[in-house]
Image (cartoon, rainbow, N blue to C red):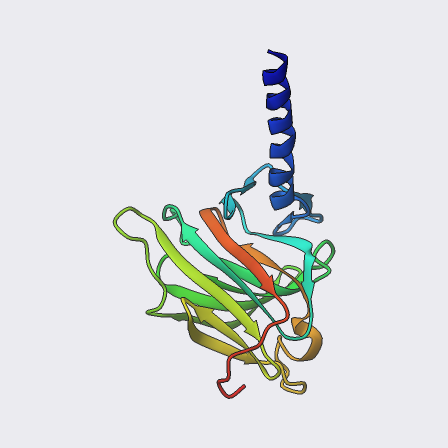
Length: 220
């Protein structure tokens, strides 16, 4: 009996760090609110899973870990599974270049939606600056079960940021100084994470910030 109790206690202790390690350090900032919440919020749920985490609820928000703060040449990627279509079409995906995220947030985000469109936007506080929005055949729409899975990636190279969906480049913005781009120079440096524009039921697998990173050769 004592041996069984000890084994149960040891198993419980060993189980705790796994969950804490996956979730620890992440913050949630709801649009329009003045502060970020640690690892969750009353209206948006962020839960660790075996290969990543799930996000459900809304409204619009960013989720990030300050440890994922990078500069220079790097990549950000994640596989997004929409578990069921939302009543209102919602964009979801990656964000990077995050600065002052607990004050006046400043970042660029790359998202997709269930209607097959992607968008690239810059956000400064409550101001939204459109960079590009377009339908694209590489985006997988919900199937008969209501699910869709898409891999998104942002690659920061010396002269451009490339935005990829399921391995295909769908857009690019310059990083060269003097272009007046939202991604020029040091503007790409900062925290990286994920972005949802409204209520969503989403699973994110294999989210990663990759550095060192060697960009593919494609004229950049």
